[in-house]
Image 1 (cartoon, helix red, strand yellow):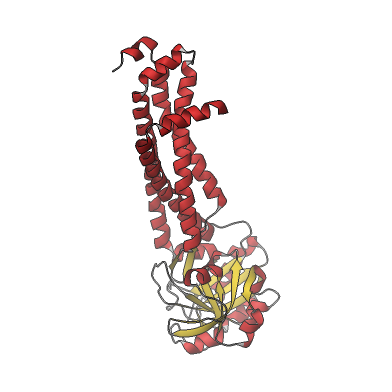
Image 2 (tube, rainbow, N blue to C red; image 1 turned 180 degrees about the vertical axis):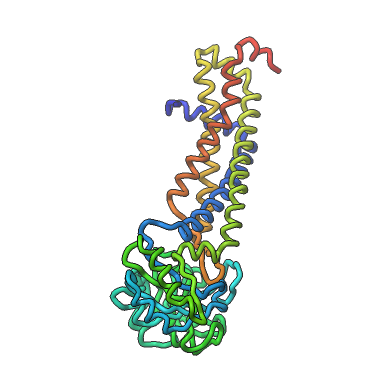
Length: 387
């Protein structure tokens, strides 16, 4: 560790070569910007697809169907699903999207029954209404409750009307939810959506059922019971936990995100190379100065720690700038990757900022180890002979 009294000396060494230091900081900031953006994307995929101990939701879909427009199930299935032991609630849902392929700007309509929203076990229990009124949504057939991310990205406000997928709806409220799939959708009345579009079937036809079970341990058992219930029907089903369903439906996005890990490690390698190069050049310019410092009583270990501290300072400052910019872009951009009517929302969080600074500091330490070791082992006489 370096005592605080040495900090002005370290800063002075960096300021002496303003252009080189500025270019190094800019390079570190750009590389950390890309690294944090990749980490944010991976974090969004993890939150949307990784199962947790408290998950109690199943998705019932048409067997061998993937796109919402192709999954058509009779709405009356819901009565039989609700009678299966372990089922707390079951809600028929019709989904209409303006783009079924992977995209950054998709509006997903989810048609639901009013009683499935405001009932004792309804969807509203996991929402926070941050604008508008649930009563307005109940009383108006063309009303929509939209997710906070969708509202921020499109600039929608309560009372606004908008068109998408051949539908015209009016915003009755904006909801905030901890569920990733609620942040980028527009909830509308099921009957309205069935009548307004023939895509995915008309009245009496839905895309899927959202089923809640009484205990997470019953997910597998209830899923098997539902599929067995409709195995001999004209429209058989496939039932999976919600996050497993998201992972399969968004398989292309998940694979792309896996590839971006290589980009993330490449960014860290770039940071390491930039900081190490700056420190090597700086140490090479100050060989005789280090000899003077040793003559004045500075020990080799202290000189080595001063050099490492330079790398840490460059890494932390550049990393802080790049990380802050990345989180600001993610936060204010309200980006969301969507496919097959399912969304993976990018979310800026403080722990990502902390990891960014910690990684930047760690890279600075590693980058300064070799130059510090070489500088600390030089003899005074050889330093004065260096050209």
